[in-house]
Amino acid sequence: MTSLSCSAVTCMYNKDRYCCKGDIHVEGQSAKKMEDTCCGSFKERGESMSNSVGSASSKIDVSCDACSCVHNDNRKCSADRIGITGPNACKCSETECHTFECRCGCRGI
Image (tube, rainbow, N blue to C red):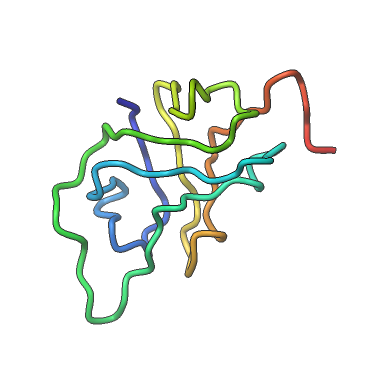
């Protein structure tokens, strides 16, 4: 399991910058830079919605479509720790995997 910190505090699964979902999915199949990734599990918290059922955890399973990332091991994140960013996100495309690092030196230029 990966240690996850998440600044997407507008997500219904976020509690104290940890995730209550239990697992997340990082999207970005053709990603070359972190801005090309996003947390596909992000769901905006509605006004009447509290956090999702579950307990917040710093350890979480992360499936990942960003196959060009050095941390991607058979569509699972192998990084010891990752960060999801998007403090003002209203949709998943406004989040990103801050740990994404393109393999083979590609820089997204």
